[in-house]
Length: 149
Figure 1 (cartoon, rainbow, N blue to C red):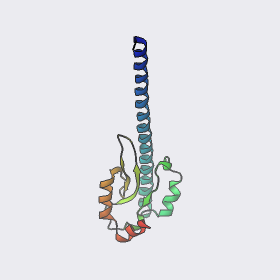
Figure 2: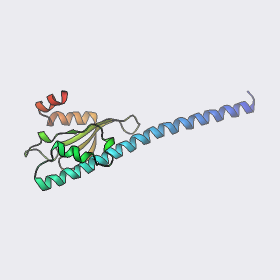
Figure 3: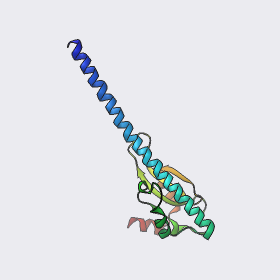
Figure 4: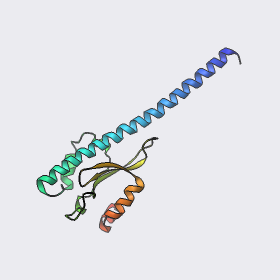
């Protein structure tokens, strides 16, 4: 190989490497944006639920949440929302899960898990194992049966 061929080959390798890095970065950035928007939508939903609880001394009904959800910023990125109001009662602790949505990201920074809204309005990200363990403690047999259908 002469110098010109070596230089061309090196340039091609550099361009391919930079392109691969850019593609991976864009996929990770897209997942990060989707995650952030979903967290923001769940946070807004939590504020609505807390306001409703203060005004009515009960959690909002599922139909009320469905109507509110249509106008949430970033609600498209929430995906399927599991709302647990019918299993919340006066004995429920503030740590009880009010709503959650399972998400699966394919990036280096985010994996599979769920965005969780607690009864006290806190929103957090939980990995799949942790959310499954917590739900196993909080779900009744009738709720589990309903979700299987």
